[in-house]
Amino acid sequence: MAKQDKKKLNLISQTIFDKKGVNILALDLRNISTMTEYCIIAEGSVGRHVKAICAAIRGVMNDEGRTLYHCDGEQDGDWIVMDYGDTAIHLLTPEMREKYALEELWNKAKIVDVEIIVDAKNPGIK
Image (cartoon, rainbow, N blue to C red; front, side, top):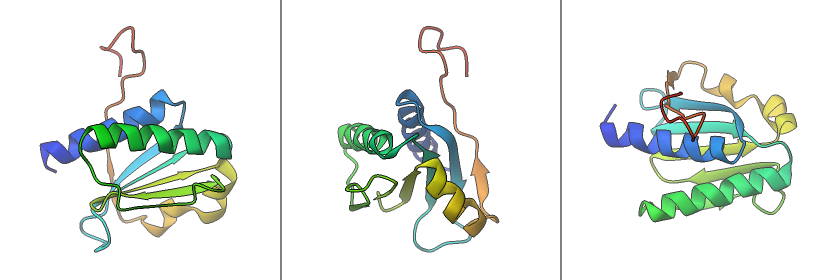
């Protein structure tokens, strides 16, 4: 995996975590999908929370100069899909995540070990 890909996945995952998103899963789909290279799946507690996570990701990725090609589901907020070309981000409420079990669709994908700083006051804790 290229260093810039790892950095991007870490940044997205950290943004989700910082907005109190949970159950963050990053998958490497390069050998099993032609639609995207990486996928991040995460949860927000309710639709409004999922929308806030989406807005935070959009801001951070915009600051990085990344183009958001498509975003679907923002109106309802129970399942938002963000398409950055080489990376797809699925943000769901717990009920939607359980119902659709996206992890099962890509059960042959490699899990990417993202680095998330848990305590901003002590950056050494990951």
